Length: 470
Image (tube, rainbow, N blue to C red; front, side):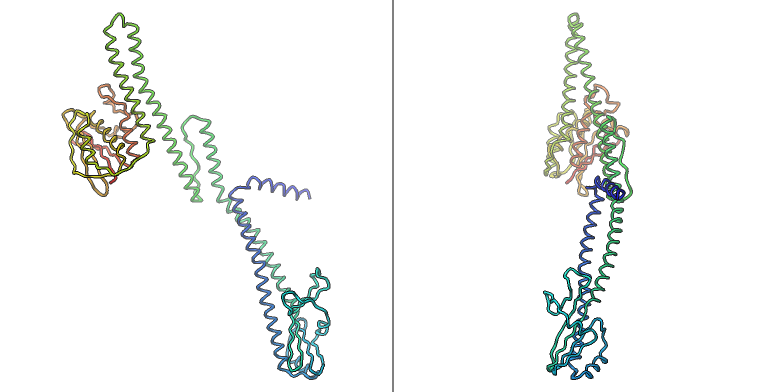
């Protein structure tokens, strides 16, 4: 008894943590479904089988009644001839014949059946029950009975339905045994199947917790990735998607750290220079008044540079968060307006037809064009023009900003859209800039699904090619 108790205690201890697990939910749902099917079969199969068997017995009784009605039974001799000519199971079928001359004849055992007092079933008087005690199921005897009268003769047939009930009982027991076996095997099978389906999810969840804990405990880059099981397909797709998300987050984290480092470096240099000039003024300003004006000029220039850098940082932050307002824009008119009003020393030439429309955010596309033009102006000779060109093909509008400047090397093309990146040739104060202009352009372009290509302009210069949606 103690072993059984311990077994159930251990079983409950195993099941309790799995109460809300997918495996147990699937198994429980299957069990209830199978239980409903079992109950339906236990009710329907014996009912249909019993109905068909009883109907067959009733048809047999009608045949005997029909035969008796055709026979003129006046004596025991007539009765014996009828008995010999009609074969039936005397343990199941009992017949009583009462002639118009008040003579009564019985088949084997019929007199015993006829002498008893029966209880009619509530739904039909053709079914009678022989039982001493209502709770004594083992001694129940159910009969189907039918009485007809022909030419003053009374014929009564009783059919004992015990064989029908024996068949139903055997069928029911067999059905219950088979269903119990199927239920046990089915629950075990669905449990195994559910475990196969949910184990990869459980492993994935555990791996996620480990990665999350490691990220919390470490300030380093997220390098761990979740396992990618080959099956089920849905779990594999979930793991792959989650790893892709981790890659994106990791790359963004690296970019953010690099951004903070570069911003600190860019701000540190002018601040250190300003601080040095202030110390120089404080230390030698009275003795050498001429250095004060030079230092103030330098401090003013560095202050403007810092102001420009901070403004670019704010623009980059807004580019990542501002909502888009996509409208239909006349690109031709926009470029003409920009070419007439930009404060660049180079001449801006336009080569395109009128009334070319695109779908974009007006403020952001305006900012993209100005930033690219500013970059081209910085690296182009003053006597060389900058050309704005538009072409339309295959459902897209291609805008090109062409300059005849120094050009961009193949290596620099890979990095020019990175934050604070400046080509080696430009790392001097002779060409102003924070290294954020093209980063802002790239961020704004990505938000509007604008593709940017940087090409060489032969024999010299650079072409910025923007693919816009029409």
